[in-house]
Amino acid sequence: MTEKTALWDKLGKTDPAHTKGFTRGGGFKGTAIKPMWSYRRMTEEFGPVGQGWGIYAPSFEVVPGTDGETLVFCTVSIWYEKPDQISWGVGGDKVVAKFSSGMKSDDEAFKKAFTDAITNALKMIGVGADVHMGMFDDSKYVNAVGQEFAQEKEQSTKSSAQLKRDGAWEKIMADLEADLVDVSSGAALDSLRKSYLDQAERDGWTAAWRAALLDRLEGCEADIRRENLWAEMTSISTLGGLQSFWEENLPTIKGLGSKAAADFTKKKDEMKNALLARTSNLAAG
Image (cartoon, rainbow, N blue to C red; front, side):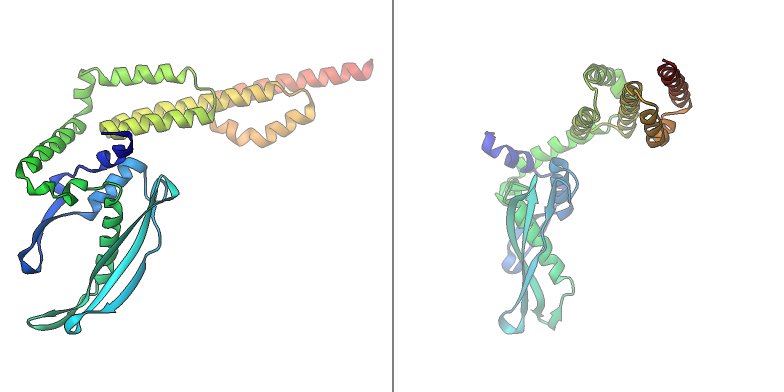
C-alpha cells in the first residue's frame, strides 16, 4: 500500500457473500458485485450518500441495435469527499432484445444501465477492484478473502458482555474521559463525537455501546452549554442586559433541567438585586 493507492486498497476487497456469478451470450462466465454492497462500501468510507459522496444526474442515450434491437446507454458521474472530486462511468442495457420467441422489451433497462454506470464509476476509485481485476477467478483468493470478512463479522457481533470482559469498554471510556478534559466548546465536542463514531463504525461497536457513547457526549454537551451560559450571564453588568439575556435564553435554560434552571433563576435574582442596589446608590450619591 502506498499513499496514492490507499483509497483503492481500502475499497478494493470484496466480500464473496455480496457477489453473484453470471453467464453471458457465448458462454462467458464472470462475477458481478451486488450494487448495494458497493454503495455500503462508499458509505462506510465517506458517510451517507448526499453528505460524503453522491451521484450527479445521469444522461441517457437510446440507439438502434442490430436485428431490430434497441439499446440504452447511461453516463453518470459520482463525487466523493468534495463535490468537484469526480469519477465517471458508462453503462448500458437492451431496451428491446431479440429472442428465439421474438422481440421483447425490458421496462427496467434504464435502471440497469444506470446501476451499471454507477458501478463502473465506483470501480475507477477502487470499489470491488479485486473482482474487476479477475482475482475472483482464483478460488484460493476467494476463500481467503471470504474468511477475512467472516472474521471481521464475528468480531463486530461480539456481545457487549464479551467485550466488557475483555476490558475493551473500560479502555474506551477511560480514553473518552481523558479526551473530554480538553473539550470546552461545541465545535471541539463535535469533532470528538465524529472521531469516536468513526471508531465505532470501524471497530463494529454494538448498538448498546453506541448508545452509551452518545449519552455521555450529550451529557457533556449539556455541561458545556450550561457553563457557557453561566459565564455569559455572570459577566453582564446592566439590568437591561440581564433582562435581554434572560428573555433570549430562558427556553435553553429550562431545557438544562429543573436543578440547573433553579440555579440560574437564583443567580439571576441575586444579580438583579445587586444591580438595583448599585443603581439606587448611584442615584442617592
